[in-house]
Image 1 (spheres, rainbow over the protein chains, first blue to last red):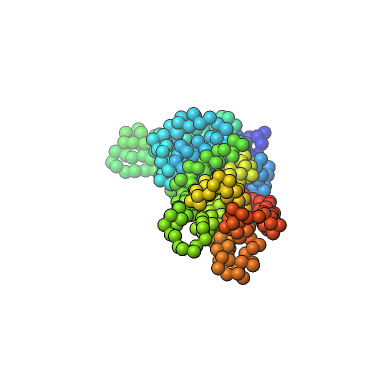
Image 2 (tube, rainbow over the protein chains, first blue to last red):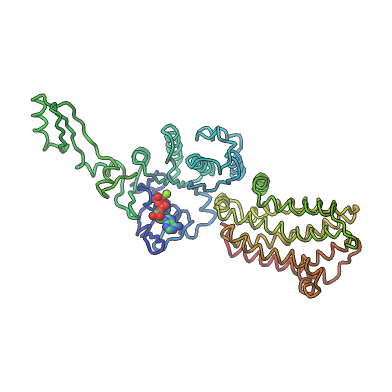
Length: 286
Length: 230
Ligand SMILES: Nc1ncnc2c1ncn2[C@@H]1O[C@H](COP(=O)(O)OP(=O)(O)O)[C@@H](O)[C@H]1O
Ligand SMILES: [Mg+2]
């Protein structure tokens, strides 16, 4: 993590319990300003709960959380103004249409309404602009919520599974939007259970499992750490399949197969965040 | 100012599609017209229905609708987002309150027309309604701000609204109720409306309504300070 950057979010032994059952268990982490921070974990890990604590919607039972150096239990309008959040139908008026919602927030944020059609096109909601929010699918409502959060020109964005259930093209659009935000210096805190998303756009990730942080770091560093999982998968001409460690210990064996011309196919499996996660928990991320 | 107008416009669109609130606005004006035109019982005071329903309108419509609007925004977290977006709580309340007040004034105008008053009496009628609606708005806003969910707001508005709108009606038939009810703004307003051509602004009227406004404003300020809007 860059030392010279300011810390935007800081959690210190943060715990949340629902009826004595720990949902978040003594989490400590820091998010530097201007980075894309990914909270990666399967459904039920506690990702949404953490966002709720960090945006001041839910009070922790123990520990401390700070945003812009302010305790999240006592955020004032000044901090709130710098925070944009996208979760569920957060901030949307269900009876109003897609367009009417953005038009209302455009007025509130003093942005001209004429930019709205372009915003709607970029998140793939232009066709649905006259639909009431209550009639939108979850993915569509998510995207509208994202557009709404972006309109406020926040310095810190909380995004709860911004791309879940979206097609690849729209997902890419949203990644582009997020990377543009980072270029502007915005800090992005997003949750996902999609490891490709985490690997491709996050500067820093934390793997959350049942309310505990089980791994953290830059995606490349985490993957490198699990390099011992990197295997060479070899299929021989007689259909035998072999998995050899991808290091010098396998060199002589591979050389021999090559010299005998017995190899039909060979490929390596570089560790991903998902393999790291499976290694740590014995379970997949989905 | 910009925020208040935006909230006002949003509220206009939203209410048209919100049946529970819409019916509050339309019900009594519609019933008044209907009853005033169809039911004519000999010996019944002139404009009986107009007075009765005007009083009930004051006690119900502004109170329930603003409580429902504010508590829904609290429940669905939209109010939090507005406050996060630099909308000042008082801007929100003036935007929403101004909207409800205007709609209720429009409803009052319909009721007023059913009374077939002259110009001057009509203006007096509207003036009385304006004050009554304002007090009810304060009471409703207190409930809305104090409730976390719409359900919670409804469970409080129902008894409160019963007191303000039914006691004046009951006091028409029962003297004892009248003795208690005369400390309520809605009762004083009901009495003024029933003698609209010749009522006097007695010390009792002015002080009861004045004290009612004072108490409502005081409770409103206290709630506003204590409960944050989000
Ligand atoms: N209001 C609540 N009361 C009780 N349990 C809850 C509540 N909200 C969430 N949970 C539980 O907390 C856990 C984490 O939920 P959540 O934060 O939504 O996970 P995620 O967003 O990672 O899928 C889940 O097991 C869920 O059942
Ligand atoms: Mg979730």
